[in-house]
Image (cartoon, rainbow, N blue to C red; front, side, top):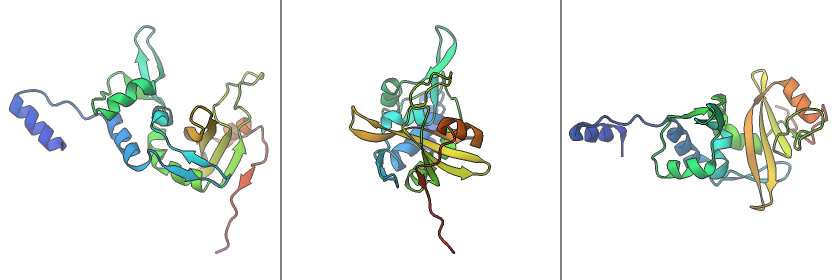
Length: 191
């Protein structure tokens, strides 16, 4: 139902129209263009874009009223709301709003990265650094920062999935890779 028709119906019924959910719009874009896609990467691995990873890809968080802290939103809770188109933004936020803007570029990053590295922070390390899920890091330089996507094999699904994607600095990437050389480097073609 179009927004104008919803507004007209709300006015006819004498009720205040519900504001359209910003997060629902992002999910709708994901469903239309990304959900269920399988991207062949140069590693080679086939990377699956799954609905259950959507909240992590945009870093959707919910407010825990018990201790007034933000925590990652549970796919089991939010996905049915998105699917039913009844998600309400109240009590939710994007921890890193830049991730939403980068989401449409994710297939290109996986298909044609400049570099692929092994993630040396895949498991929690003894050096005080937090672990980051993802066996491989796909990287693409863009305007002084690096866009990365982390992939791993999910044994439950028997598929390679994207677990996260965001922008980092060159120094952050160097720490995550222990300054190791990439396991893949895109070859530049002569013009």
